Amino acid sequence: NAGVMQNPRHLVRRRGQEARLRCSPMKGHSHVYWYRQLPEEGLKFMVYLQKENIIDESGMPKERFSAEFPKEGPSILRIQQVVRGDSAAYFCASSPDRGLEGKNIQYFGAGTRLSVL
Amino acid sequence: AQSVTQPDIHITVSEGASLELRCNYSYGATPYLFWYVQSPGQGLQLLLKYFSGDTLVQGIKGFEAEFKRSQSSFNLRKPSVHWSDAAEYFCAVRGDSNYQLIWGAGTKLIIKP
Image (cartoon, rainbow over all chains, first blue to last red; front, side, top):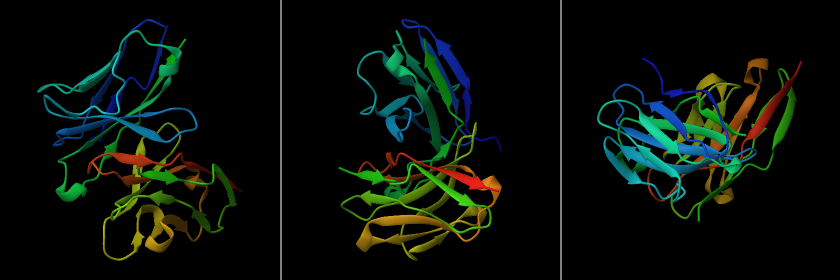
């Protein structure tokens, strides 16, 4: 049973380019969460999606960032016109459901390390 | 607002020695608490969790953690570390939303031979 798969593992972009990060959740999981980790900091929540729905994007910057989780295929985190401050590790997690009273476990991928030159 | 503090950025212990990694949280209600480990180049792996019940929880790889409400702490322990335990350890608490995890900044564990 494959875990959460993220690709690419490393992504280098120049300022102004677009970055697309992919996340395939564990089999049977329909809930996806994206987190960002800046150097020397803990992870910060960005967005929570279910299939075809954005449930909570309160942690995502209002401009240049978007996320989707289509009916078929992986979840995509898209960053347009990247800037140096976007350099970070982006982690995706999945869970089978939201869990009763929040008692769910999120399973994480290995992350995508984005470097903006 | 919820927050998690891991006061030690780095900890160095000798192989075979005992380990305790500190985690303090700030959360108004009963917290759900987690410890994850990140080995170099790997994803975050869940070591253990606390939802309710027995305040001493056992995890994988010989780790345990104790929830102390009076101290708002959830420290991770292992009686005897192995070189393979060298990694970064993250403490997290479930936020008000029931799905957001609030994370500490992590503690890097270095093992001396």
